Image (cartoon, rainbow over all chains, first blue to last red; front, side, top):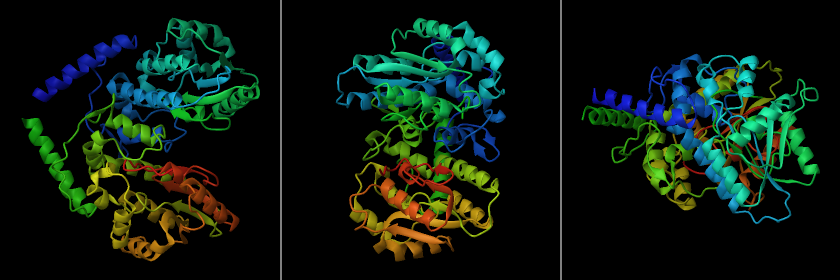
Length: 260
Length: 260
C-alpha cells in the first residue's frame, strides 16, 4: 500500500514539474507507472528492451510504437528518464566540442535537427497516443503551424555552449519551405536566438527521397561552401547516417516515431 | 519493509537462476538492486543514461565503466534486463533473416563476433568489477584459456535459427591465432556445433590496427571469396562499423567494455 501511495506521489510530481516544463496540458495519471525493466511484454520482449533496440538502431523502419507500450513510452517521455538520457547525450557532445582545437575562421558548424532535437513536439504526441497512432501529416502540420513547440532543455544548453565556443549553428530539418516562417518564429520564441542557416526541405526537389538522402545532400552542400561540420546531432538515425555526416554524430533518444 | 523483502527475494531469484545459467560462482547480494531509472548519479547523469549513451554510440572510447556504476552494471548483466535486451536484438535479427528470399547456393553467411556475442565472459567480469578494473590482458587471456565461457542463450537461439534457414555461420573474433584451439573447444562445448569459418586475428598482420580495420578487412576477404554477408552481429560498434559491414547489422548490449 505504501508503495502505491509512493508511486502515486511520484507520478503526481512528475506530471506537475514536467507538465509545466514542456507546456503540456495533459493528465499523466491514467498512464500506469512502470518500475524496473519497463513494463508490458510485447510478443516476448519488454517495452524497455524495445526502446533500447530502437535507440541502438536494431529495430528499424517501424510505423508506430507497439500498442502495448503506449503507457511505457508516455511515462518515459514525460518523466525524468528522457530528460536524463537527453542530458547524457548533450553532455557528451559538449565534452567532445570543448576538447577540440578549432581554427577560428568562422567556418566551424554544428548541425542540429529540429523536431525532437531542438524543439519538442511532446504536447502533440501526448494527445496522439505517444506514437501509437499512425502518423497524420495534417494533424501534425496543424500543430507545427501553431509555432508553440517548447525547447528541449538539454539540447538548448548544448546550443548555448557551442555558441560560446565559437561554433556556428545550422538547423537542418525535414520541415518544408512553407513552414520556414513559423519555424523561425518558434525557434526564437523558444530561446534559440541566432543561427548561421536554417535549412528546410524543398518538397519538389526531394519528393520521394528519404531523409538520409535529403540530409546527406544538404550537408554535402554545406561542406562545398567551405563549412566544417564539427558535430551533428539528431533524434533519428537518418539525421546522422549517410554521407558528409560530420566529424562526430550524436543520437538523441526518441521512442515516438521512426523516419527513414 | 514489504518492498525491501520483495527486492531481496527478486535479487535472490535472479542470482539463483542466472548464476546457474551463466555458470557464475558469484554472490549477487552485495550489489544493491536499483529500480526505475537506474541508480547512482555520475557527474550529473545516471548509470542507466550512461548505458544508453554507450549502446547508441554516443559515449565512445571509454577505458573502464564509471566507478559509481559497478553495482548498476553488475545488476544489469546478472539480471533479467540484459537477457531481455539481448533477446530483443536477436529476435529482430531473426525476423529480418526469415523475411529474406535467399539464393540457395551456400554462399549466404552471417557474421558473429565471439566474446559477449556468442560466448559470455560474465564469470570473468563478475570477479573483476564488471568493467571497473582496467583491462588486464594476462588475466583475461588466462580466463579465455580455460575454455569454459558459457553461451549467450539468446544469441545461440539465433545461431540455430539461422542454420535452419540455410545461412552459414562465420565467427569473426579479435581472439588470436594462438587461442584458436581453445576457442574451437569452447564453442563446441557451449553448443555451437558447426560453422563455415572461424576467423581469428593474425597478431603480426594487424599489429597496432583497430578492430574496425581488422574486421572490415576480413569481411572484405569473405566477400571476395564469393560469400554474401546477409547479417552481422556483435556487442561492439567496431564489429559493425567500417566497410563490408553486411546487408544489415545488429548491436548486442555490452556495458562492460569498449573496443575501438
